[in-house]
Image (tube, rainbow, N blue to C red; front, top):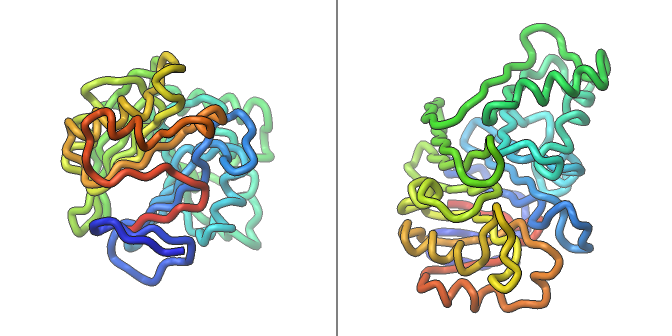
Amino acid sequence: MTGYKNDIRVCETDWPTHDSMQITILGSGTSIPHPQRASPGLVIRFNKTTLLVDPSSGSLHRAERHGTRVKDIDYVLFSHFHPDHTGDLGPLLFALRNSEYFGSKKLTLMGPPGLKDLHRGLLDLYGTYIRLESGRLTLREIWDDELEFPDWNVRSLPVPHTENSVGYRFTDSQGKVFAYSGDTDYGTALIELAQDADAALIDAAQPSALKMDGHLTPKLAGKIAQKAGCKQLIITHLYPVCDDYDLLSEIRSSGYEGPAEIASDGMKIRL
């Protein structure tokens, strides 16, 4: 199925060659098992660069299923270090040791403070099974930062979830902007990250009646999108109970009048 909303394309087929940013949602759920929603994760593809963001358990296989070769991933970014956002890091490092598939592929890990501790802990647990040759793995801790690369830029800001949590604002070479909240409660940082974004993927874990500390609701996600002037809102990180609620009506109750979608596993967005 293919649908169009403004300049955003949502479909379930592989992408043609294109210079713009392309996003694949690998998981729209949480750590609580759900038959249609896996734990979080997404792929962002630029002209020459592929990012894997918040790789929960099973993300590598879902990436391959939805059209991204794991051998093409250049960067892995983390919003924070809860297990449902980091579960496939160990398996990815283990897989990278298979030279027949990956060769001498280099990889950069980026995330808030604590990233190096996470990697060190995995090394303590798995040892040589995940240790890569010198020069193949780069770790970069980021916080309130703005980084520029040849075909993409990223802005990170701390958001209210854990002590070390960040949200991201990605910009491609055409000036298209995609904002990703990670897990977060309400705050001004996400409004800044999502300012005038072409699309924003925002945590809306549970409906307002069941609001959780450290997470948004569909109504609060809509409020952020409205204040930021987002061109498209997509809500994600949905607990199973969300199946019993009208989430789009909650978004509308916030005053946000732009296009809104409920994320689904395998959803693809091209800006």
